[in-house]
Length: 138
Ligand SMILES: [Mg+2]
Image 1 (cartoon, rainbow, N blue to C red):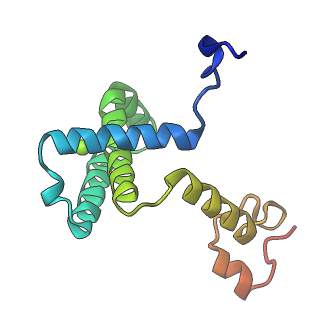
Image 2: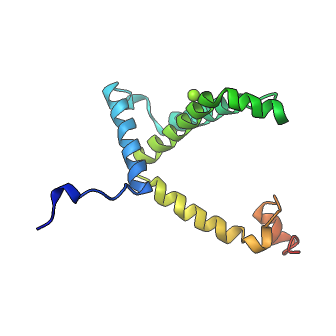
């Protein structure tokens, strides 16, 4: 006979964590009756607007000044990253997309597009490697 106190000791998988976060956001939205405003276009706009708020933390600063600014505004940075993630979670939940699975599939595609032995140390886009062969292979 199994011990019920030992039933759920495994930590949640990344997919389970993202699903729980999305569930919390949907609950937050439903408690406020905001789904009526969440059409796909405005959700995508909101995602980009939050990304723009993230960018504001970087605007007009470079080098050491930027590093110092980001240290001093660490919570603001975390808030904006969380806002961006929130929209990603809501859009993927409403579109019935498993975000963790999508991330893994996209990472696999990027492995194929950017083989480490071909692109290491280069910032070129994958299309530049295709058009110029393996130009950066040293
Ligand atoms: Mg924000």
